[in-house]
Length: 190
View 1: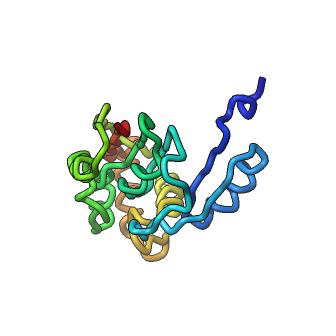
View 2 (view 1 turned 90 degrees about the horizontal axis):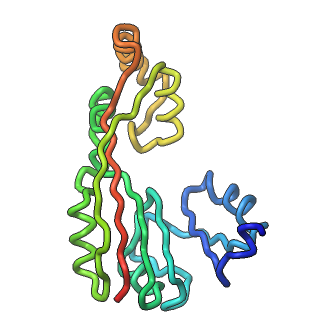
């Protein structure tokens, strides 16, 4: 039996990050998953989905409008999200003389928004803190190119002095470790 054989009646994936839209369609549509392009930066946008249509909404590392999540969940439905705390990698940002873009985005910030939304019960709210380890500057460059909001305007040319400083740290310590924080939240529609 394939996973596709046990899928629910309708599965929808929403995506806003341009590099991922085509990839999501290429990989998910053959499995019967509908891929819907949304504008993540507009949290006021109504999702093109029906009221009470889903028993599960999963969100990983992207913003969400809790009112829209509540609207599309059926009674008893679950919203499960893993988020990156807005203070994650603050020490990496500091190494490039910049600051995290969303330092307010913490577990308490998210829970306050959920509590203001009616008809939702918080079942799980957890924080995790660990380290992101880099053993060479090339890996840092790759990461910052892939995740461009960590160090805005990053390029090897414009940030060479910072990279050289980080390389000195790797030469001395063998690796560099930066603080990373994740949040896990499960909410149920009552």
